[in-house]
Figure 1 (cartoon, rainbow, N blue to C red):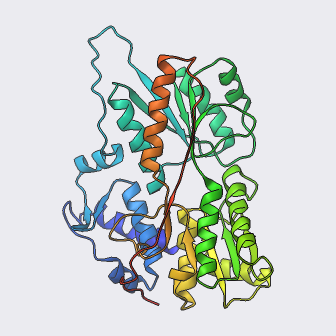
Figure 2: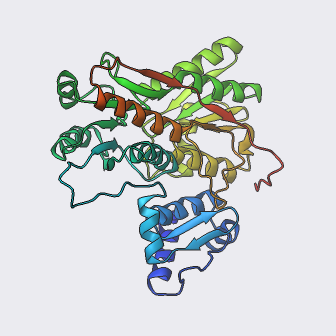
Length: 371
């Protein structure tokens, strides 16, 4: 069991046994890190588990609070409004589905909230369906049809090819909107971020801070749509600066159970210098991992790490000082839902291709950084 899992289990036990009651405040991240002899990134990951399970609420003003059973249900359902469904009416229930690989991080939850808010205004009930992988995605597309959904918003798994189920639905002209990722060669409505521009912004920031060895770290494959475009943007930034003096290395398919020691070994295997490297991380998990690695090695992450996924806005997270991308995921989900409503109303509506631009957020360095 990993340290963050141990911390999460300890607090679950305290809640279950009544040692921590609804309304009780959990100690700050710094104190928990000291008690367990871990980094604050590890504590943040443990708190993420508790929040995902609906056991706690985290805000800047109040800190981390234990929820009661009613609040836990509300936390799990999200704070967006859901339309009231009357069982006495003979009118069919208006339904739509969001199929998404996971719903365990802030990015996914913001997307879900954006979709739900837009659909709720038009009286739609939203089914949030977790696909987990490519095989599950294909099955869940059919599940959404079986539920009599009027349309689907699909957040594709990080894969290179689309499924037969998706192609069949396209041929049927079934309303389906892609979000965040798309499949080259399949013309569908989509709302995505400009992943190449993301890669360029992140790499350019690190280069300006003196990094000459750029390392791109991801849990998925480098060949996936989003990663391949991000890597393309990184290469472009290097070419525009000084391609002879700046190198790019890629650590892809990083295991979810990898620790800082595993990363240290992989970096050694790259046989590159260590004094001027900079990291670009593709997911919250890899951001936490690299942040912990740099902290353990007494390296200030501010000029060495850029996180592509939006970071947790909780006062518990020590990520607030890290440069990161704001990908406007709520707006992305909201816009995709509005297009879906148009498509349900008029299937002949021309395809809409929306590419959003992320913002690089450079926090105020007055924040205290522990090394």
